[in-house]
Each structure stands twice: as structure tokens, then as C-alpha cells.
Image (tube, rainbow, N blue to C red; front, side):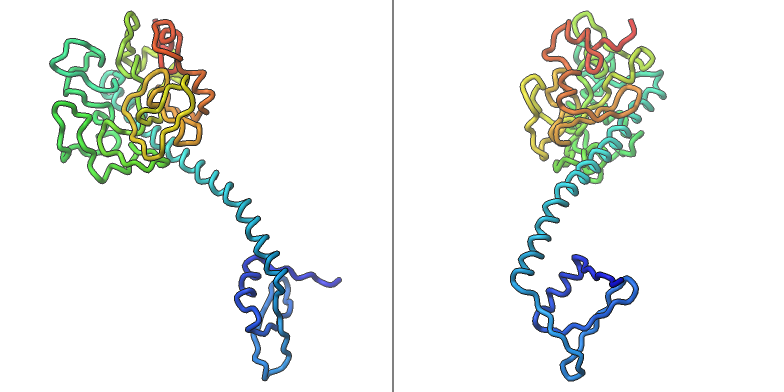
Amino acid sequence: MQKTSRFTLIELLVIMTHLCGNFVRYRLKTDNIKRNFLSPARGQVKQYCFTLIELLVVIAIIAILAAMLLPALGRVKDTSKIATCSGNIKQLAMGIISYGNDHKDFILPKESGATSSSARTDKDMMGPDYKSWNMFIAPYIGINLDHVNIEVTAYRNSMVPVVYMKGIMKCPASTKLVSAFTYVQYGMPKFNVGGEPYTALPAIRTFSQAKMPGQMALLLDAAQNAIKLADGYDTTTPDTPGMYAVEPHGKDISRRRHNGRTNIAMLDGHVETITEKVLQQKVIASTTYANLANNVLVGFKGNKN
């Protein structure tokens, strides 16, 4: 039975570069094609040229293949960024958990309070003034604060050293560097886990006080000024700064960076990736006592009585 030779796309491109200017003699040997280019003086010459129609067909095939492959490559790239982001947020969550292990099971608030303030929205963690959670866990995530120029009136506004601006505080899907600790691209829920009580609802203080740690958000993808979920889809751009704390109705929670999805690290340390539609069902529509009291993800329902 006669074998049928087939050119690969690469082989076709090679032949195209020698159109009408070279002579081709080829023969089959097992499954490989072997070519020798001969001069007219040696004989056994065959002139081989593509017609215009054949060229257009090849170009059309290349265009079709490109159209088929590029979306798939884009999806692979997005999936890779989500996976890397999940690793980042998990490391940060484990830093908070490790801090708790070393400090009597204490859950860090979103920031420490001002030493001059009598209002306690930070689990009685007075001073340094407005030091954010990511600064407290710096030793646990490989960040050295020794050479940071501290903004003493608000520690979290201190500039992040250049070497850490592209580190685990930055989502790989974002084009914005983390310039200050305030703008870390993963935020802690404002209420309960983040330290703020709501009227008669006290904030959780220790990990052992959580009855549903696998459903309570510790950190979420964050983008400054992302709109409330009840107001529509997130339209923030990839160069939007992050925010160290997020609102329970979805403001500052990023959904756009991962094409309508959000990474969430739970209080037990595991990470989930959920769609904007599902997230809308899990947060609250507005900040009220009833909504916060009956919400597990960003409210108070996950606490032990």
C-alpha cells in the first residue's frame, strides 16, 4: 500500500520561504521527510512552486488555527494567575493564623487602633496608630520592616520597600504595584473578623470562638472602589490599587481581576474561588444589624454564642 506524505505546518512554512527560487528533491524514509536542494547542473531537477490559491489556503488555515488557539491560551493564562493568586492569599492567611498561634489564639484585626482614641474597633489592640494586619505578619511572610520609613500617624500608609512591591501582597492579575501597606491587594472583612463590632454584635477575638471557620472570610481579593455587589458588576481596571479592608456589601472586593471571580481565604486557612454571582448571594445587600447578624461569610453568624 502506498504511503501518503503529509506536511506539517512548520514544513509548509519552510517550503514557502523557498518559493520559485529553489529546486526540491525529496524521498520518504520511514516516517520522516528528507530534503536535498540540488543545483540544475546535477540533474534530477524538479521545480516546485505554490499557486496563489494554494498560498491563500495555507494563510487561511494558519489564521483559523490562530483564532482557535489564542482564546485557549488566554484561558490557560487566566487560570495560572488565579492559581498563583490563591497561593499568595493562602500564604497571607497562614501568616495571620501563625500570628494567632504565637499570641494566644488571637485573630489580628484589620488594623490596630489609635492610642489617642477611646473608641475600640480593633479588639482592644491599641497602637501603633493604624498599623495594618499585613505589617503585623511581616516576619511570618518574609518581609523585613527594619528599613521601612514609618508613617507614625498612620503606620499602614508607610511605603512598601521596592523589593516587596511585586511579592505576595500583589495579585498576579494586577498591573499595579503595592506601593503602601494600605494598598495590599487582599483585604480583611471590616466587621467581626476585621475587628469592628456592630451595635450589640461583638467582634470575634480568637480562632476558637469560630463555629464555622471554613465559611468565614479572613481575606478576599481587594480593589479600591469596587462597587457594591447589589449595584452591579465590578468595573475596576487591572491598575486599580488594592485595599487592606473590605466592606460586607462588597465594596472594595475585587471581582474583575479574575474575570468575574474572587479568591477568598477562609478562617481555617483554605482558599475558595467563587464567581461574582455566587458572591452576591453570600454577602449582604446593605449594612444593617439583621443582615450582619445572619451572614456567615462577612458577618457575625459564624461566631459561637
